[in-house]
Amino acid sequence: MKAEQWILPLSFPFNWNLKLKFNVLPGRPTPAFAKEGRWFRAFRIGGSLIPVMVSFQGTVEKPKLLVSTTPAGLKHKQKLLDLVFRLHGIAYPRELYRFMEGDRVLRKVKRSLHGFGRAGLMAANLYEGVVKAIIQQQISLRVAEHLTANLVERFGQHTSFLGEKVYDFPRAKVLAEAEVEELRGCGLSRRKAEYIKGFSKEVSLGNFNPEELHELSQEEIVSCLTAFKGLGRWSAELVMAASMGLNVIPADDLGVRKAISHYYFNGKLQSGEAIRNFAREKFGRFMLDVTVYLLMAYRSGINV
Image 1 (spheres, one colour):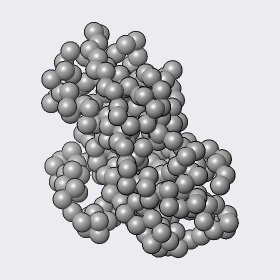
Image 2 (cartoon, rainbow, N blue to C red):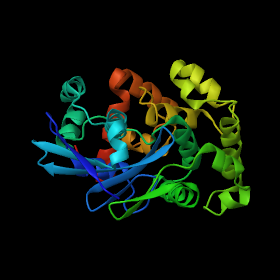
Image 3 (cartoon, rainbow, N blue to C red):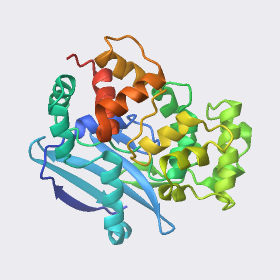
Image 4 (cartoon, helix red, strand yellow):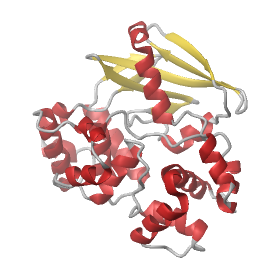
């Protein structure tokens, strides 16, 4: 399939390798995947499946993004670029960096992760985000990503682009009509399969539009999502943070608790409520971004 390309010089330091390391499971579609420094994903826009490939040129200090799509994608340029930038957190957060420079731990973390930028998103839309949150419940992120890839490969639509099979996330109607045993065949537990099928049915029938969550307050979002079977506060907070970019953290998440406890409590594991209160007071309006930096630093073994 013929490709068109945009070359986008960035006016701020940007580390593409850090983004791929933090956000993507290499080789398998979730539905995004990375291969040899290139990031692939398809998006359904206006009823069409539009593939995108993003790669990098230059250096961290003088970066350029190369965004490739099909001729059909050209008329959706702004939409595609908005999605790419939001998913990867591509921005120069001056105020965040200034805040991090004022804290001994965050100063070291920021300098060790130079060019990471803002926190990205794990989903292109809120339906995808909710389903991923269900999958991630009580299992490691690595396992959750493999299960998500199983689901995408079995139920997601794909197209061929630049020699690769490029997927979008499965549509609600497809997962609503799937048998529970088919979903379990992707490695999901029976309960998670039932939760995903049930939620997808409500969305596909038009009884619930996840995008309307953008119009609600944080507590209203929690109340709305936890009304669905299988969605608790942890899942709602994960959706708000990782799919909406709100200044919220899933404080009961073991990874979040470990990272913040490691850097601020001498490794003594704190409760979710203690982490939530500490992060709100300590990091304020930068809580989400700072937590992502601490997670990245903890996974990378960065000492301060």
